[in-house]
Image (cartoon, rainbow, N blue to C red; front, side, top):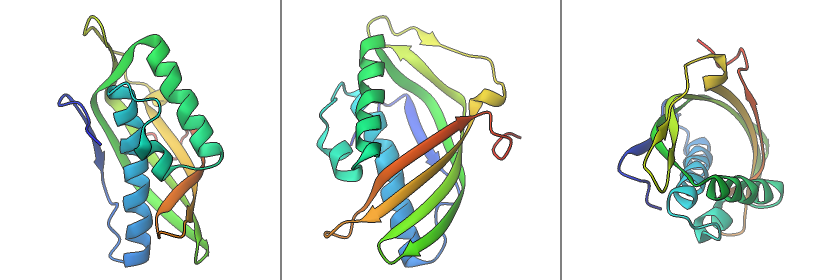
Length: 156
């Protein structure tokens, strides 16, 4: 997965010291990077997206990638992901809530290179909840992903 040189995802506090939790968070960060790389590289059928997503999360990722392709946008700037909290349901499924700060991340027009900046507001912050399930290969795949812009649990 290759992100553009002018874009990065930063994951703060995603190492807990617990090997099981860290594996789930590592695969979740790879899921985030896979979707962003698919958008940036115009790869709507990216194998990495399929590898890290399944079920509704895969459907929704495909819809998001297609929407960005239709608009002609690629990501630029920096997205910061922070405050991950895990809840184990059993040995093969976990829930993760986390926040993102998109105040320094923008959409860039693929053709013109014009960056579409937006003012920083509460909507620059997004609360996520995800369900991850471990597959037979030991990969934590995202099966459900929900988001809420401007959620007070993530705004400064």
